[in-house]
Image (cartoon, rainbow, N blue to C red; front, top):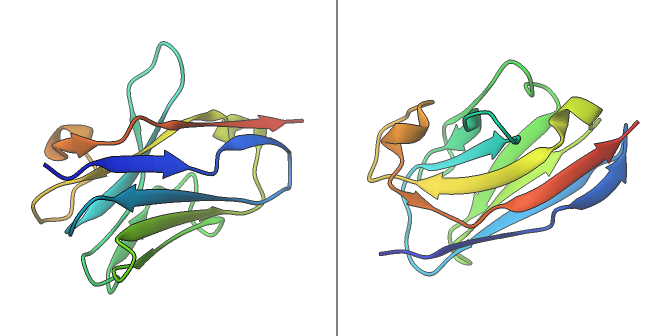
Length: 120
């Protein structure tokens, strides 16, 4: 099973940018980003296809967040711009065996998460 490790989280101010990384131990296919706040389920953020040709974002982050990948490094990135306090959450990357889904249950391999906190 491919291991996923997120990094790059931290404390920033509203309007700042942050880039998260998700390093995989091997080849991955569709990669998704999700986020979760205490007491709530995991919220879909976006996904990227295996070759980067297809990306899709939740309305809440569209135009502010960008997902990219470097398959030579087995790494997927989440560039977050114009951050808002409501973006505060633990961010997770996840992978599945193919297909494009917004439901967390469609992803079978998850990282441990990285905390992003945006102060107002």
